[in-house]
Length: 256
Image (cartoon, rainbow, N blue to C red; front, side, top):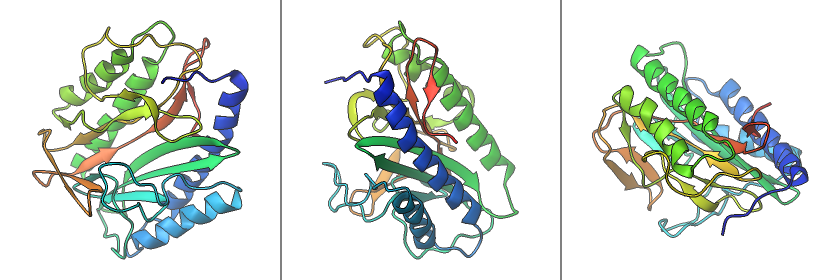
């Protein structure tokens, strides 16, 4: 069931979104060659705890996973697109890192993700991939307006990704968000515009394009059903914001 939020509830979600934004900023500041993914997870966890918030990721177990998620961030490196488990891997100069993070504060949740190159060696191909993913998110957010259709967001995202020659998979995408991290509706990253439910003020969505640099849509899953990787080994990027649809236009809740 799709639930619309009041202005006051959206403002409460904005506070949770700020916690997420601070956690991701701290992770990015500390992500450098030689730093472990576990260390980045603890940095994010400290930000969340210090804010009096909790993590909706920690111990989360959806139907597709064999085990609960053991961390507060998803840390996906290079060919990993989504749900990477932070472990003892030490980042290398030139790695492409995608970090997804959520926080629940006073009963309301925010969810956001960033992708960036680590260190000084920043391949031009990675920059093009990240820039295209960011542009797709911007396009999806711009389509999140009252009176539009849900698939307008999907079509806007895919239009950018396909034009850039990138792989897109519709199995995992955006979602409604509020008191729970995952609420209705599902927001695919590809589709024909003008279809699906009407967008109304008060709907809050996590919009999250993820693209595969190799141009193919195929992926594989490892780590007990968690980590999603490109099937051809090409690099991936994932960028996300929690966005409220309002009569004044889209309101991004997960930025500082």
